[in-house]
Amino acid sequence: MENQQENSTDNRHYRVLMIAPTSFFSDYGCHVRILEEARSLQQLGHRVTIVTYRNGRNVPDLDIQRTLPIPWRQHYEVGSSRHKVVFDALLGLKTLQLMATRRFDVIHAHLHEGALIGLVLGRLFGLPVVFDFQGSLTEEMIDHHFLQRNGKIHGLLRKLEVWIDHTAPLILTSTHNAERILVEQFGSNPLRIRSLPDCVNIDEFRPATQFDPTELAALRSRLGIPKGARVIVYLGLLAEYQGTPHLLRAMQNLRRRHNDVYLLLMGFPAVEYYQRMAQELGIQDRVIFTGRVLYEQAAHHLALGDVAVSPKLSQTEGAGKLLNYMAMGLPTVAFDTLVAHEYLGLAGLYAEPGNVDSLSSLLESVLTDRQMGEHLGRQLRQRAVEHFQWRRAAAQLEAAYTALCAIPSASQMTQHFQSHQK
Image (cartoon, rainbow, N blue to C red; front, side):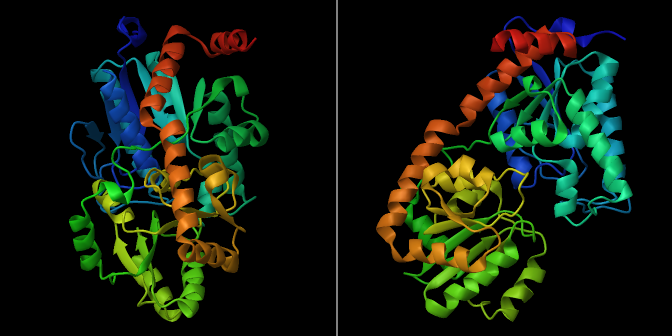
């Protein structure tokens, strides 16, 4: 079969096929990384096609190609599910169709399912593959309670995960912690791994002082937040591994001591489940559930906050919400994980993982010491500006594509990286 690499343009403008095994675009997590990577690459002149599941929200100016639907699962959104096997099979077929009818220079595969499809079809069509690693496949399935550790299925999937991690010619990790996990736990070749941290759009996510105060006041009123009340903001998925129950219990502690503190809990799914939990904890009058907040509206909602929180418990996934908080100049409390430290640095406030009292105590300290909160917020904003802009990430992606397209085989690529590290 014809090798499609031969027509890569001399001016380094690549035709990129992004494989996104999810319901893109859905306003959270890995979707934001996919979106901002594609936008940043297009700003540099590259052509990006995203192939994804049937469901999801279309985004202007992006070429999004979707799979056929399956009649028994019309509204699939997030989380591990046995239905993903069918979705991924349809994604593979759609990817094959695109590769047979269009010309691409490189495959940029997100998540392990995307990497599996990319590696198989990339070999068939002679295209290089970049694997965008955003956490362990099996660990995420355990976090979602879809898989039991050390079971038979776990062992098989773990072997498949290791094969993907060892076969991908180049892996991009969203954190240095993920890079360490790949090397230490999965035995991946460190010479094939490059860290490409999650980043943030610092022009969109900016301090509250840069927003129209009239608009913010109107939004605050619509949400039912009293004038003068202090606001804790959370933006992300609602789930046990995200620490949602811990956050609600921490809010219960704060409710006992402060009558003017509200929690703006922005996210999905399982909203009704956590609303019932809030009612059982006696804090339903102090927790405002918004459900899904569109990405385009996220910054305005975050601008209502006095402090941001990320009680995520997963040790392997990234935590892109932290970057949004940082760019907004919000003092941020997170559970003490390696990923949180990597983003927040010395300006973060770290609670003992899983400890509700520790979480509520740190939130209280920021709410009662505004000067400290403002100081930490300025530091975090500056850190985001200096280290986590998508423009820099796009240049790194471009360099990765250039390295891959110039080296026809995985063994030669390893030799190439070895020579550059000497």
